[in-house]
Amino acid sequence: MMIEPAVLVGFDLLGIAPLPGTAQLDRHIGELDRAVGRLRLLAQEGVHAYGQADLNRGPATDALHAYMTSPDGALPQAADLADRLTTAADGLRVSKGVIEWVVGPLSAVALAARVAVVFAPHLLPRLSAMGARFTAMLRDALSRVGRIFASLFKTSRVRAAGAGGRTARAGPKPDYRAVAANRSTPVDDVVAEELRRPGNRWRTENTPVYHGSRTSPDRIFEEGLHPYVPGDRVYTSLDSEIARWYARGRFTYRVRTSRGGGFARGDSEETVTFPGGVHRRFVEGADDHRTGDFLPNPHFDPG
Image (cartoon, rainbow, N blue to C red; front, top):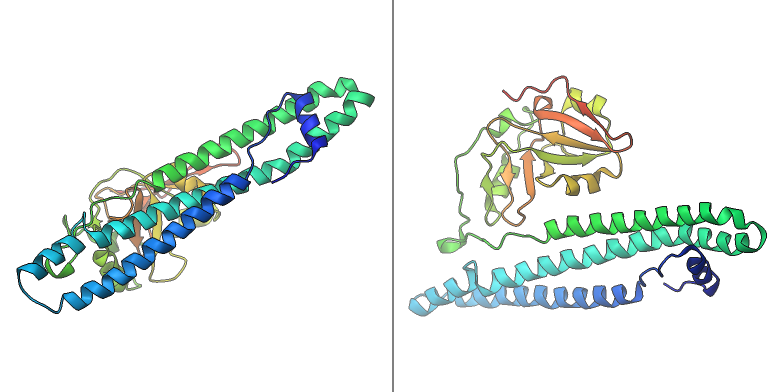
């Protein structure tokens, strides 16, 4: 991202520090993407090689199995690192987009300052205030991006794989149909898929989770949170800032169930999924990010 000399002069007039360049971000993103590709290939080839060796039996094969599939084994670690680097690269892409988004209006203010210094000096304080607001917006946006991706980067390193590669299924099994928005649509396949994911567990905590959406509270409070695809799942997060990112400036819904429900994802310390969605009585309310108000759900009754 090249900034015109005239704009840089305007920045000086307004006391604005030069914006961070994006060329270095592009280089970092490229390096991370290449590293992810190598790790994915390593994991893929490792699975193939391990599949051939697994045809054998004996102590050596058992040791190989433990080395390859244990939480600290080669295959889980390669996949885990690839996921982490992908998250880091996505964070840099979002940061680059935020910087480029601010450059346009901030450059216009800087050019206006160049003109004002000659023809209307009395406007400089107002332009300076506008520039300060835009730079504050940039700092706030980048700070939010950093917090969101720092949370996403905290993927769990605990991958439970028992003998034969079976996934551990810890904890009791709540009645997911009691939480689902649509209790008549079968979600057994989704439940089975969640159970197969390494480290997943049925959630028993009743701490609130959050879901970002542009759908109005009038509808959500009446119908609950439904999956985009019938018979699928609704994604929520323990981190309200992550949910706010998906809200795109509209609504973050707070979900609170009395006896847990849903799956705590083993590959993410923040994600909780609800097969079949969330019934309206478990939606406590919504944060309206345009007005700053919290809108309570009149049907909230977690029991």
